[in-house]
Image 1 (cartoon, rainbow, N blue to C red):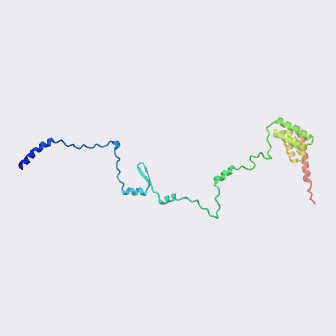
Image 2: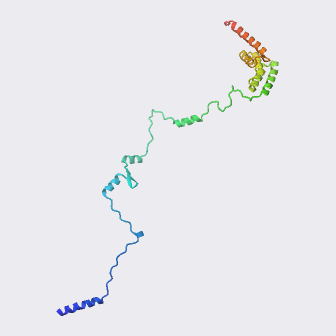
Image 3: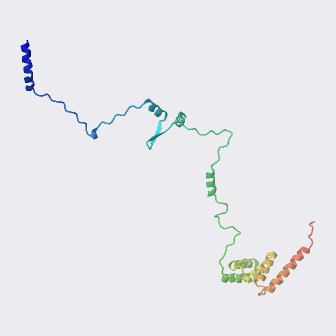
Length: 228
């Protein structure tokens, strides 16, 4: 028995040299950087979960997180449709806004605008002494034929071409005196004397003024007759 143990002890080194070497495990190289698995995030704590649930509307500004807490009443108000305001039965409906009223007023055209000149407005003529002399000549023709109204119209038209035409003023006063327009005639006689105090018709104008003045005195001196 002892001999067998000695033989085995001597033969073990020889057998160990004859056996092939066992493959050794090689160290694993890490994968390249572009294919690295994403790092696992640490699970959130209960405190952070409560903060997020209490403030759901959060914005990150400059690395800091700003949150706006929404009230449950606001969410319910947004979900519910808004109803129009109720007007009592005994109250009149609201009037139009001021903007609408002002726009309607701006679009209105005052009465008479754009419908032509007013009947009392006379057409203005350019200054033309030659045309004024022509109208005086035609008016004198009508005056000599006792057509005083036509003569008055011609003399007035002459004054539109030349307002300070002395002869037209005097002839107009004569025509108005014939038409018993004494006040207008007196004013035109006086106007002629202011323009030409020593003119061709100055003496005739003075006599006419004296005549009209005497007629005015006679009319005022007569007592008013009472109707029976």
